[in-house]
Image (cartoon, rainbow, N blue to C red; front, side):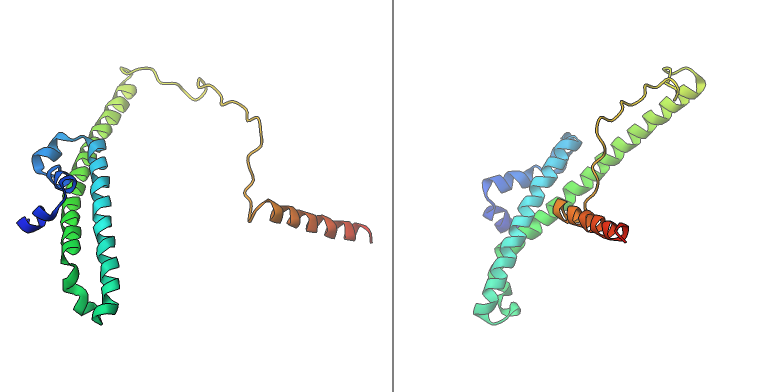
Length: 167
């Protein structure tokens, strides 16, 4: 990475980048990796937003996008740095998630084999399972645009029916 760019980072940003070193990432579990991923994504979004805002404001002053391009190099470089760091963390999240998925799958297969052979814990059959409690109230009906509109539609239908009945 560019030494000048690393020197332009704040202490918090420098620590955030340092957390993405290979040895540091190996120590983290899945939840900690996801938290780190979210923090890095926020930092990247911040600098992308800063770059775009400054670039769009500079277009009017310099007369075009090409002329304003070199003026906002620092935010653009920071956004690129956080993008590459985010990719590194994303790869590690994928590895850890895949590992967890494989562990869960092997546990599930192990439990299924044990249940099939009869050696596992007894499973509840459908007839042995407790019945769900009866609902105390009716399900909410989906509305199309609010209570007033639905009431108006019902009233219109009732008036139409009353008119037919009066014939």
